[in-house]
Image (tube, rainbow, N blue to C red):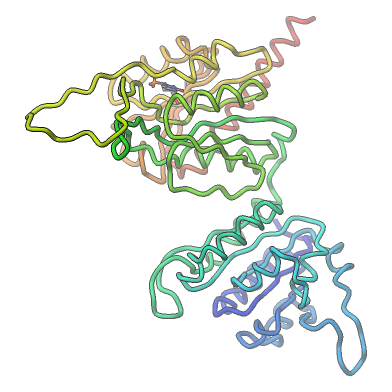
Length: 411
Ligand code: C5P
């Protein structure tokens, strides 16, 4: 799969450098040509002899080879590479990458890299959580670097938390995904709503729901990976986006979500409504905290929220495709088919709360897709990222079908 691909593996000075040996081994096994560039501190953790033996290439650390006076050209290295992967990326190396402090071969090469760059951070949990690290990661994302997020677990310090470098197998998976991404959504603009909405009652309380936003965020990553420009209108969730092609608009209430979604929809080719939007909101929002009083009961008068999917569905123009979700507890098929019509959607993705592993907060989903022409396709239980791929594949197929029909009627 990676045969003939030129990959620069940048190793900086963290204990996770030992995992990079396995990463290098896997890349070479997949047929990649790997050039290792290591920082002076990286060499303290892992020896260049190990790395050059595995990569079959001399390891680059210094700007010059002292005894021969040979100069290592970071420029030609940058041009040679199809991809640069910095793993582990320490807090210090990321800070240098974010600000362009090119005082070693790794960062200098990064500044010369023409193609895609990935970074797999690894550090202790407090370093990871520090605002300066988070700022630098944000900057790198804006600069187009794909961050392969660290996992949580036992750390070299003995503490436990976030900061463990992603496993070599996961990094290889992301590298393969990068090379295999067919850019079949290049030039497309996609608007996605995700997460719950929070409907304020007073300054400390709201009415909300259990949506985690995971499905909508997975869809955003999938579309962006396939070349689309994505606007993700997100309710309050604790998720981060990874692909820099995703522009995120954070909102709180259904009314705010509606405003942002309609604005983005005007310019979109595709809209996917994955948010769990509250149907009603409190009629009044109290300026100050509502007191308990002495009553045993309390009544909150609610008013109807706008139906974002339906509003966009009604305003839809010929080149636009809309995809809605139906999360049901009963009469699933009937409700899903009804939604397709009522909201003028091109596709409804149905999941049932009756299925194990499907629905809110899970990392998996089991879906059935209802198409405009009456098609019904059932899928097995999969990860939300894989489900996102299925949804996008089905949506593109439906668009092509619609285009073909339009072409036929044009003739
Ligand atoms: O009618 P129901 O809420 O079951 O429809 C679900 C679909 O409609 C989802 O795609 C959801 O994102 C969308 N929706 C919306 N605005 C609402 C309610 C639902 O966009 N106010």
